[in-house]
Amino acid sequence: MFDNAKRLYEIKEVLSINGGPLPISKAGIYLLVSRGEIPSVRLGKRVFIPSYFVEQLLKPPVNTKGA
Image 1 (tube, helix red, strand yellow):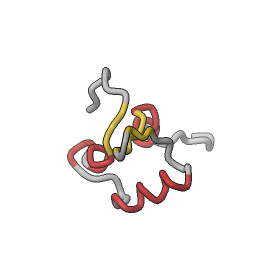
Image 2 (image 1 turned 180 degrees about the horizontal axis):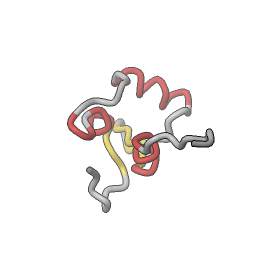
Image 3 (image 1 turned 135 degrees about the horizontal axis):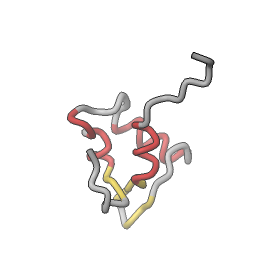
Image 4 (image 1 turned 135 degrees about the vertical axis):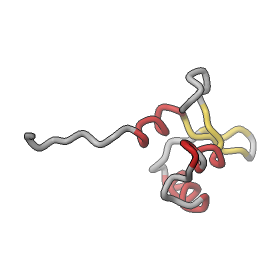
């Protein structure tokens, strides 16, 4: 799934994780980054998303209701 040594992902990598894109467009990710809703690291003109955030997005939701 992920390379555990990798700390930052380019936006194009986030869109193709697990063989399919996340349900958001590249423009949508840039919008959320600009709003501060997605943490990011900028190196020059490049934008990276921290691996902890991507992994958090891919975790299955926790069922808070009693089973």
